[in-house]
Image (cartoon, rainbow, N blue to C red; front, side, top):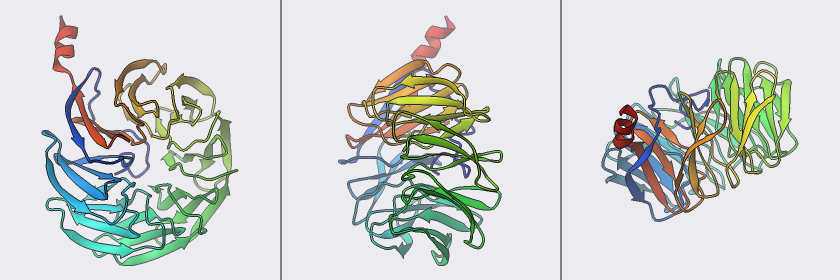
Length: 350
């Protein structure tokens, strides 16, 4: 699912670092890709503005199937127990068979559809929608368990789950903590502007960005502020967390590493354009896209750029880091599969 796990830390267990990238394949969806790919069982699932969810063979890049939706598909899919879950601008939430692309069920939403990427756990699918509601649906049937209303300004943030609580931001500028079983509010915290960023939970702290140019660290049990750090622009990017460090991009073009306990800046790196994508963490490496048309690999300890891959257009899709390599979408409509260049390994061994 989006950000790799329920806590949305961005650290993917079992992924292998790509230290010298080589293109395995490029798949053209024919329109913008902002959806973060999900790779499960040798298949890459990704949405496109071309009104389809695509299933692509992870090894060959050949299309397995495509599923039509009557609107742009911006959200990132979640895959569990042979089912792909996602929403779209057609005002519907969809559950599709992962092998065949056949519909299993759909759930109707209010105007604006769904751009929040779902979290699936314990028989329940959680997501936010542009009708201002956070939904909990039965994973198997699509029946509504509960809905939590925010405002009619909508939700693009994706839910993180930890300790029986759903954490999600909304365009009314509020971060919401919701009981996962009952749908009742545990606490709310108001930032100074819209929250597009998806929270990440590490330990007892919730990390999230806001259009008020700040990154926040909130106490997971109370919502009280532990620290806030100002950047030079809106923080649409969702934080990644590992090893006591928070990694997040900003519209100011910089990618930041902040101490998780204090918020103190450890480093920042200029990536040449607005950073709306979220980083994937693999060992000592960070992978993140930029609006300057590149996918970057950064050193986690220093922020140094280890390599950059040119796509030719904005990279707002977040990277899926897997044992099979890296998968990422681009505004040019293409999905890129990058693998480790075996020639680089041979050269290093000499």
